[in-house]
Image (cartoon, rainbow, N blue to C red; front, side, top):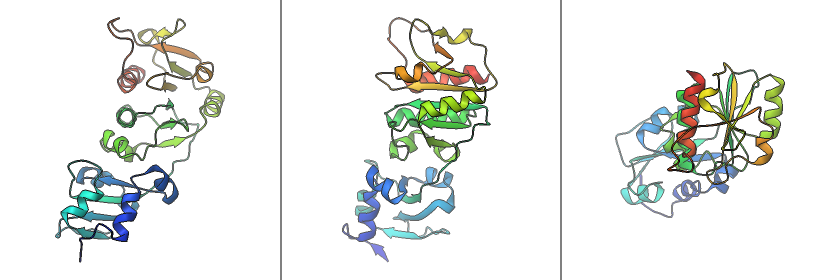
Length: 242
């Protein structure tokens, strides 16, 4: 059977997951494309929609025509496989070595890139403030190039997290351009650390900066005010782990 109706209940349900409120309510989300689907844990795949009538898998496969696939697609140029996945949760532990804290980082593309860097530099946890972007946003997942599925991520109150990290004697660094910030290259790379990065426009909140052990900054040309948060994060993580 091939679904050809745009008003089919399964199609309407899948399309609803493009919105955060429905992702939150159903604890499910969409991903698109063979690359991402291949990287996902197959046990979390609820079903897959495709125009490829020869495709089979160990989970339900729903065949659709091109018009329906277009409606399901998260992009202008749909790929021929779109899946519904069940959300999974990580439990934050405080006995690890490397933590990356995101304070109100709101751009999904930036967060996707940050997740990719976090995996590249073996960060144990990415911890997002509760007002940061939804990690199940399609642009986050695509921007991570699949690192999303291999990275432990949690939402938490950053003030509480920092307090508990300090109890474990893990030094906390805040990336911010202020007069008290130490140059990154003058920081001796620690074996264990927590790095905080902030919102694209406002940076890290003053409340969170005040909790950090050290403020740090990347030296760059005066031709620009600041680096993109995902670029700055990658540079700092490279310094810290090498």
